[in-house]
Image 1: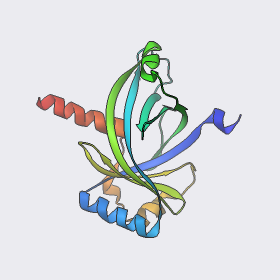
Image 2: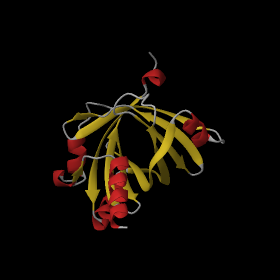
Image 3: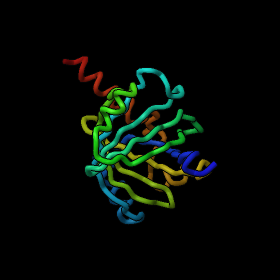
Image 4: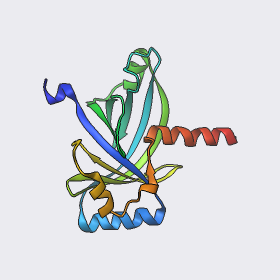
Length: 183
């Protein structure tokens, strides 16, 4: 089976940050890491009305800089402080992608916007993120299941008490539900 057929492993952990902490971390990564890019990601998590996907899997439609992609995120597995999934992503050409997906039974669910600055630090991807209307976070990601993310987190002064176990779709959904409950 080829890598494309297997997909890509995404292993990650996420930390909540204060505005000050995010600024400090970004300055550290600019000094000691390698900047990759900064971007705004507009994401829609698609609900599977017909329950065709494996339990715990979902489709993500994301637009970055006018380019769209569709990602099938497999079921989540947890190992220690980290979670990992197998992902399959494809770039989409212009056209009515969401309409086609709706015709196949996938309807738009949670939406969120994330501004992210992406770096490489000690061979792992580290992003400093701002989830609109929610707050700031740091994600540490790798495609290696055996990579020592504890050492990376320690080197960046990220603390276990700031670990966030939920993914951005759940965080955004919870924030949207809180706002809806107040209205």
